[in-house]
Length: 122
View 1 (cartoon, helix red, strand yellow):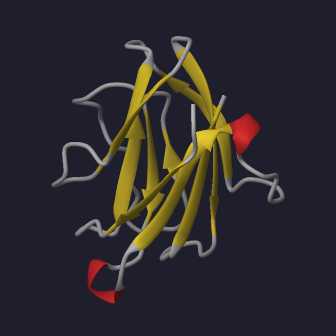
View 2 (cartoon, rainbow, N blue to C red):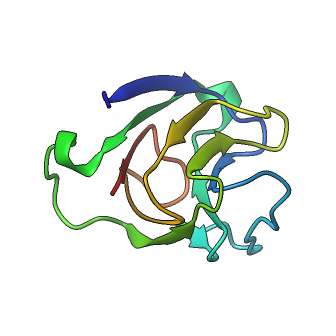
View 3 (spheres, one colour):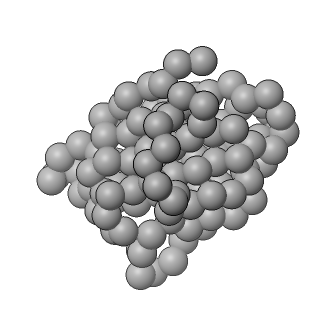
């Protein structure tokens, strides 16, 4: 598996990591930081009109250690995959994983409007 680099501009200032489609998105009105449930991780993004959010995505073994993650948890991945998507885009990326639960770690460079997001799995 290789590390992927994406540039995305989600219209609604966040994007999601989920193990399947049609999940409930964890939300909170103050929009601070990363929100999660056992089925979905909601990650903030830069406002689309301010530019792209740069996402680095890959196995933890291939992502350089960059300090303590802003999120570290288990995600249900019953189809042995997880998907990056937002309210409008059905799929930015899809990743095959070896088990029905996958450890996800996320680093962001700003608590509400990150320009750079790193997602490591496994």
